[in-house]
Image (cartoon, rainbow, N blue to C red; front, side, top):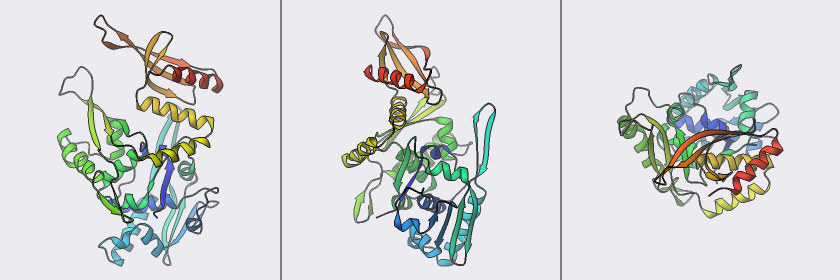
Length: 342
C-alpha cells in the first residue's frame, strides 16, 4: 500500500520551486511524512515530530518511499539528486498578498540536510500550518501513483486535477493555470498544446500496473480552452476546463462518510466551491441567476442575472452582490439559493 499525500487545497495554487520530475517525488514524499498530532500513522510517526515540525528518516527509507531505487541512477547519483532537491527546498519562498495592506513572505523549510545517512527536514511554522490545516478542503493521492508519472507538467496537472477527483470537472483561469504549471511565457498556444497539454493528457490517461492492479489516473481526460467573448476564434484564451470520469462509487461513499464528520463550515464551503466550479444556476426572487464567486469570510455571494431576450435566448445581465451580516444569516442565504437550483 502506498503512502498518502494529503494537504490543504490552497497548496495547489502555489508555484512550486524549480524541481525536476524526480525531485517532485521527493517533495511529495516529504509532504506525505508531514502529519499533525491527531493522525494515527504508526509507520510515519516514528519519522516525524509534530511538536518540532521535524522529519528525521534514514536515507535508505527515504529512497524507498520516493521509489528512487526503481530509477536507473546509482547510489551516488541518488545521493546528489536528494542533496540538490534539499538545497532548492531551503530556498523555497512563499509570497502572497492577503489584502491591500497585508503581504506575507516566508520560507517553507528551516532545515533540509543529509546527516550521517539520515535526511533531516524541519518545516517552517507557517508552511507546516498550511499543509496540515484541512478544515476548508484537502487534496489527497497516493505517492506511488504520483511517482509513476513521467514529466513535471504531468505531475503538476495530476495534483491540480486530484482536487476534483469526485466531480470530474475542473476549471482554471488561464493566467493562474500558466503560473501554477510554470508554462514559459514565450510559448505560443500551439506550443503549449504540443509540448505541455497533449503529452500530459496522454500520460495521465495511460494504463499502468500499480500494486498488481491496472490503473488509469484519469479516464476519458480531455481539455478545452476558453476564449474571451467578442474576440472571435483568434481571441485571447481566458480559461481552461478539464473533464474526466469521476472516481469510483467506493470513493464517493468514502467522501460521503467524511461529510458526516465535517463541521457546518466545511459542508457549506464545499457546497459553495461546487456551485462555483459548475457555474450553478438558481431561481431567486422570480429571477434566474448564475453563480459566479463568493467570499466565505465576508459572508458574500456574487451572481449574475440571466435575462431572456425576445427570442428566449439567455443573456448575461447585471452582477449582484448578496451580503449577509453574520455567519448564521449567510448559511440561511446559501440554503435559500440551494433550494432554487435548477
